[in-house]
Picture 1 (spheres, helix red, strand yellow):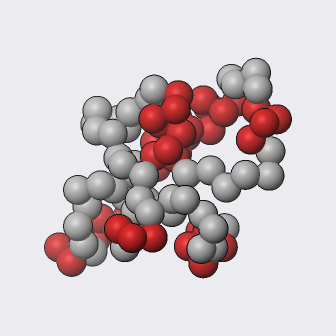
Picture 2 (cartoon, rainbow, N blue to C red):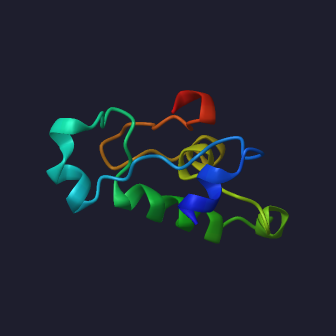
Amino acid sequence: MNFAITMSRSCHSIPGLVRTEKVIEAAAYLDLSNSESPQFIGRAVAALATDPNILEKSGSILVAAALALEYGFADIDGKQPRPLTLDDV
């Protein structure tokens, strides 16, 4: 899915860097300032699960950072990762 999102030029934003175990191991070589915890993705899923208008998003490409702005949640460290665009990468 990430590959499809990244390759899609019609997509407005792309997925952020998730702080998995392997990403943390490589942290010395990466900019983690806008990264997301795995729990952040879970918060996005929880927000979608409680949305009574979820069918309006059916078939859409959704990015956790953009959903956080829409639904008003933050990452576990209190940070608000910004949605990235192809111009940012």
